[in-house]
Each structure stands twice: as C-alpha cells, then as structure tokens.
Length: 199
Image 1 (cartoon, rainbow, N blue to C red):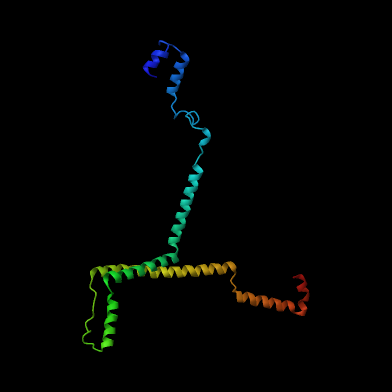
Image 2 (cartoon, rainbow, N blue to C red; image 1 turned 120 degrees about the horizontal axis):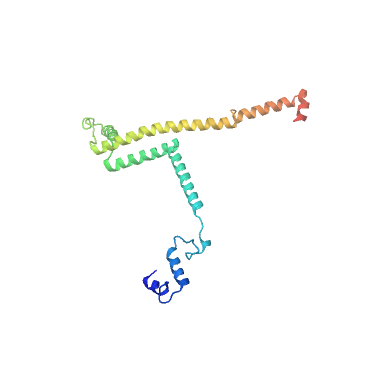
C-alpha cells in the first residue's frame, strides 16, 4: 500500500474507508503465486496435467534406445556393418594412397608375363607411403574383427535354426509325410478297420 493510499483511506486518513483499506491490504498480501489459477485471471479449466504425455514420450525414447542398442549388438548386423566399413576403407585407400603392395606385385608379374622380359621387372615396385601403411594396418584390424563377427553371426544363425526346429518338432517335413503315409497304410489294413471309425 502506498503512503498516499494510507493517508487517504487509512484509519487516520482524510477519507477513512475501512472496506477499501482492507481490500487494498488484502490485495497486496495475496500474489498471483499464492492464488489459484482462477483467481489469478486464468480459467481453471484450461490447466491440464501433461505428466502422462511426458511419461509416454520418455517410454518411447527408452524403447527406441533399447531397440537401437540391441540391433547394434546383433551379430549379423555387426558383421554387415563391418563388411561395409572394410569395403569403404579399401576404396578410400585406393583412391587416396594408390594401389597396395600386393596389387603392385600382381601388376609386376603381369608385366613380366606380357613382355617376357624378366630382368627389367626383377625389383618389385612398392608403395612406401607411411600413411597408407598406417591406414591399411587399421583396415587389417577391422578385417580381423569382421572375421570373428562373421563366425558369431554364423553361430547365431545356427542357434536360431535349432531353436526353430525345436519349436516345430525335431522331424522334418519329409519325415512327417512318411509318418502320415505309414499311419494311413496301418489304418487301411483289414484288421484295423474299426479304428478308422474312431478317427
């Protein structure tokens, strides 16, 4: 309450009015934070909790993350990813650093075979770029990881095949057909004629 309002509407003011004085005092004591939404000037029906929506969003994020991590750990996916990575690195190595020493040896042998002159090509051509050697060394490490990933993928595939076979039974379709034919022949025998009626 301002001093002017106190001097005008207060008990000792020029125009004492207890209702106005108390109203001003009460208005100052209650801030919009202490009032509920409706008293603060907002319709109370506008507010709606968004807790459920946020929880759904976090659940979806969690599920997507779990699926992504599982897909990244899947042996077949790992093998595919490493295979693509090796192919990309080999292409980059050839483009950036030139052919490898093995490729150059093959070129050297081909030149010797074409020309028939082995004396000019006795010394092997080599790519002695240290950056290429470093790059190829890392590619070789990735290739070794690719080999182990392919083995894991093969084992995982075999396990899935075994699990599927266990679920549908250990017999193959051919064995099941043979069993059905044997049962049919058994039922067609004259001594088992009464069993057909039961089935």
